[in-house]
Image (cartoon, rainbow, N blue to C red; front, side, top):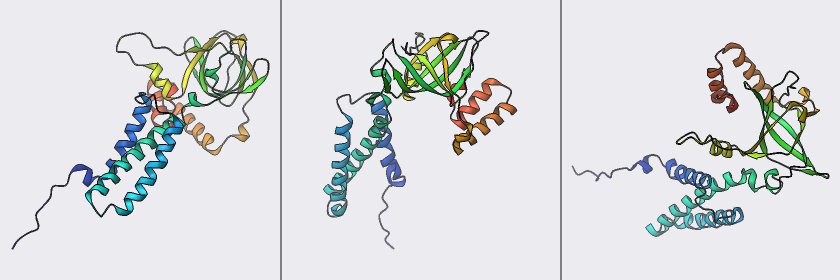
Length: 254
């Protein structure tokens, strides 16, 4: 009895989601490494619209010939590539018109909200969300940065949610300079953090304490889980790793 000829199924046929995942990842990586510096965000959005229209047109006729099917696959790949690129670009704080790093003024005073705090041997490190600048007019700004407050006997401590007034003496984050070392600049860039500054305690002023009653439900759960980890895990290295893996708090790494 004759049998139907068997055809080998390739990987992308047995796992069709791979066809969509690969261009999406390539789009993210291409923006991260700036492989397409000549492409602007509006142009990427136009490309998204055009590729989506092509997908609709070819998707309706793709069973008629191999040309339509090939064109449909190419248009689908371009669409997901631009989706990955555009999502990364949309969340890149440098592209915002009110990003504080685009108009630094050393004579200004910044208002910032504390996102997280970490104590080190010599400093208290705070991840900040910039809110406004005063120089002398008050202007709304955006962006994230690190603030290092040197430890003294009278060094104040700030909690997540506190608003503080700080100088605007920002410096670009740099690497250690050791060959083949971990790139702190690239790591923080992916977290939208490009600047830092080191100040003494008398240069930071508390503008407002965090209102615990207005804390979101997600933040309440996050803080509870963090306190439970800190209570039961005594090793600081293990605690930092667990916080990063379970809670997404990466500031606990040594």
